[in-house]
Length: 114
Length: 113
Image (cartoon, rainbow over all chains, first blue to last red; front, side, top):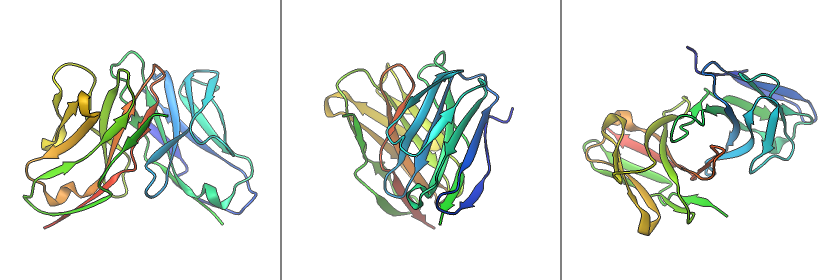
């Protein structure tokens, strides 16, 4: 039982490049989330999904897109990376059937945009 | 808008000192409250959680937190910290039924041996 895994762990991009971050969970959780963590700002929700085929915007969605084609996977895309997107990205998952919706986090992806 | 505020951004303690980290939230409805810890280089792990019942909740590694509804607070405490408690601590609030969490800014705790 691997829990929540993220690929890749580190990435360096040049401004304007694109990339996709992959999140996978093996806990059969309905809900999945993407956060970014920046110093002094805690974690901020980018996008989330309450089920396969559904996505919704979070607090800071601009510049990102997501897809949830399979229940166990949640992809975060950057179409044209900007230096402001340099951050640590965390994926999380939870189940509505487990009170009180504890979220389980992945190990993070450290992204640097030059 | 809902928000979570952690008053202490950086706390430095000696081993065996007592710890209290403040957390206040702004939301008038039913809330679920969490404290997460992030050890250096690691992902977030759940320390403790509150969703109903006894407002004093106990978590892992000797941590506890008290939910005071009238003060919109959920402060984290530990009677005697250890060097291994050095980490960043996040308070979070869940509102609504989509499981979304709102996080505070985080508090970095440094425990000196």
